[in-house]
Length: 345
Image (cartoon, rainbow, N blue to C red; front, side, top):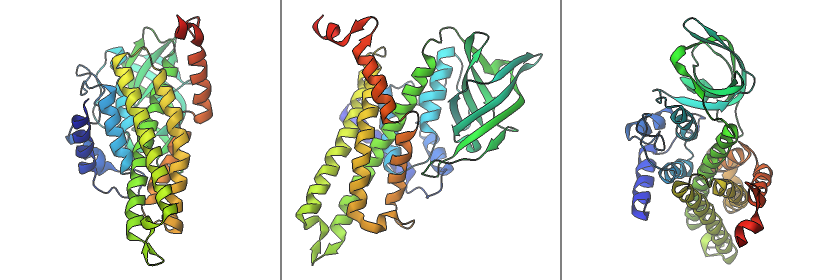
């Protein structure tokens, strides 16, 4: 995507989102996103998606993060659609979520499959119509689309009050056509985790942009000692540091998405972006609240909607330490070749 296309897409998404309420699920935003066709941008057209690259999906996630929209954009496009795309299946309608399920019991019956087991911390489960699960099956793996009607859902939340629910299935009937075996599943769970973590990183980059915009606005409006806060040198320095971190986070995810679009086999940039964004989130949240003072923590002020998401998303699908370890392993030794050998070869 060029700069103009990215800007137009960002503005279109922000425009339909408006000012989401503070609740942990924004169905009106999801309906608006579905109407403009951006809920499944990175999914192939054959599977019912937009056929766009990861760069376009990243632009949408950044835009959603900037307004603190609570919708399953990562789970639908980057995860559920990606899994079904790999099996040649079509993306079903309705609200979707996705997860990796290691402990399921899946048994064939005449008219489908009976699925039993518990999947913990499923994002948006209580709001979704179906969950797309990656699960072991008969020594291999399968992707199974499970309708959530009738499932036992125990509500949970992250620190931003977004749904993260436990789903218990007891001989839950799944139609025969909704289970798809995966021919080559080596590393598929790791790929799932990597894509999910990157999706959260893109949302965090957007949230950082939102924090910066609100900090600049507040510093210009709030007066202290007879002049705006923005006129104080110390505040100017903080705003400059905040701008630098928000920009670095955005560049990290956009560059990673572009790199993967050009060469899908080189997925380590997604890990690098996740690490950089998680590092920046700490600084962005701290400076945002320093500039706002105590008002930023109150329910009446929208700043906390962004910063709590930064804190929550930073810990989901592996924290910063997890991805530092994985990135280090990826870069130092891959395919029997060390980093030094790849640099000098």
